[in-house]
Length: 111
Image: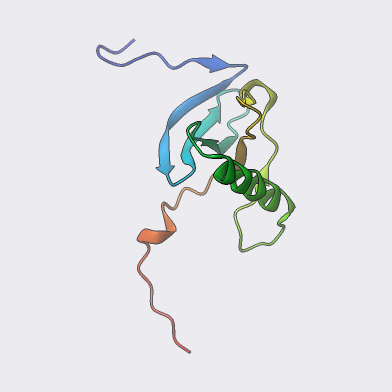
């Protein structure tokens, strides 16, 4: 192990790589399965949300699971070893898009 680096824990091949974002509901973490090389972004809800925001979080997860469009990030099933949701708040697994945060992309549109 390299000095000063913490050894990453593996859950049936899944390793937490790094935090790739955060928002009002919680954080998004990149996980990689070192066996299959599959990568997913796992969004975990903050536990200190009020009842209304918990309801909105559940709705967000439900909507994301039902969306199916080539121009949208698709939701995935949470791998069983990572499905450790607490307080009955679901986790949201999504395809990992390596291009970065869309809010930081500069573009111009012509109409």
